[in-house]
Length: 455
Ligand SMILES: Cc1cc2nc3c(=O)[nH]c(=O)nc-3n(C[C@H](O)[C@H](O)[C@H](O)COP(=O)(O)OP(=O)(O)OC[C@H]3O[C@@H](n4cnc5c(N)ncnc54)[C@H](O)[C@@H]3O)c2cc1C
Image (tube, rainbow, N blue to C red; front, side, top):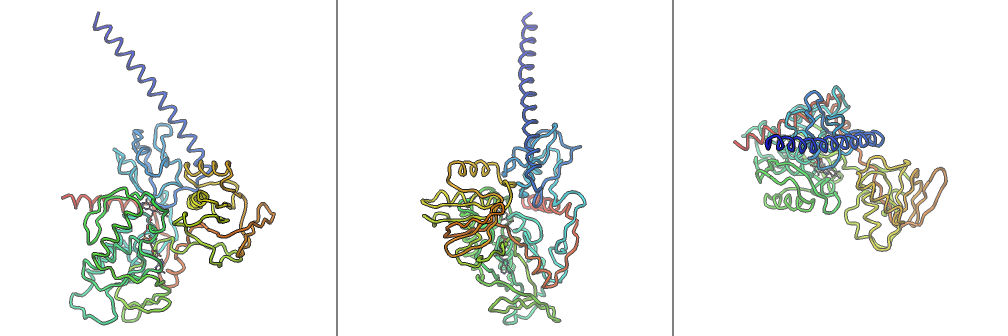
């Protein structure tokens, strides 16, 4: 009798929890469908490498939906993982790593999609022999990819160099252009491999990372960092990452020339490269282009845009108080800058966006900007474009009407132009590259390296 009662109780408890579990599952599914609908409405799709989910293999465990540092990129729909907010994905690939059945592959595009991109071999060499592309310029985002590419390019160059080559004054083994993570890694590998090199940077060391907002949390993966070894941190602030690079670069006596924008590269009949900046000319046996994709901010072409008060990046919002400010753009950078500036004493901030609503910003930013707008901290002007900028004012066209606003500073966040015109000018061949498997290949290389390092 006792056993029967125990069995009934156990059955009731199981049924209770099962009911709760199924209810929870249904709610999660409903939430995901809502997110998917919203994603469809707002999303412009993934912007770089992103997960491809094989539905036939997905067992619906939802592990992938819990590990993404960018939030709700993935959700469970109909018991299977699905991309619901593709535009938020920057390609960390943790979902693919977490999937217990290998149902997720990182891809650059949907199957069979190609894009007009610089032609590159598996060694990152362009159509011009000994001219390499490292990092995001080649199409793959993320710091770990940039570090891996930079190192690999220099290893290929080292292997090709004749050990008995003469040391010719003014001729470098390799010229590295750009000092973001790809250029830093390439430079350190050049030092490690005892090559003569110089690194040219138009701006400051650190590349895109140096331009992240203050205290931004950077997510990365363990990576083999030249002149240091395995860098194991996976989460750290932008400042700490830059300080780490600075420490390794100082120790290695980094040979960088900042303020040197490369304007042209030519290759002579002798196979040597001449690299021209505005004021200097350099010669090298090989070149690594580590220019990134966002080096040159996109301009609006508005009258007065060349005034010194117009800027394209905001790093320290607290330098600006009691100012009349216009921020232009509708992405996370614009919204975050507007909110940062509006929180400083006495600033009057207007955010101008050409569309009728924000369409590709993080949920958290959408809520916060809405709150700032409602409580009058920021004036949001949808359907508006700046048409003229003067020393003390800006003119916006809002829904066909001109409106002049008193103004001290303008920030424009209209994205960056990938330096493809520059690549074409120097003779790099472009073509339709099948992007489907490229990010997957990169991930496998990473995993092989980790396995190798663990041995
Ligand atoms: C807001 C934001 C957040 C991100 N968060 C993360 C994250 O958490 N984790 C992560 O892994 N990745 C993140 N990324 C992506 C990551 O920052 C990039 O993938 C990475 O910086 C690419 O490195 P890179 O060296 O290829 O190019 P970049 O970092 O862009 O560096 C290129 C350098 O080349 C220089 N340059 C360009 N043209 C010339 C020229 N003609 N002459 C001389 N110098 C030139 C530029 O000034 C720049 O310093 C984020 C990106 C953004 C925009």
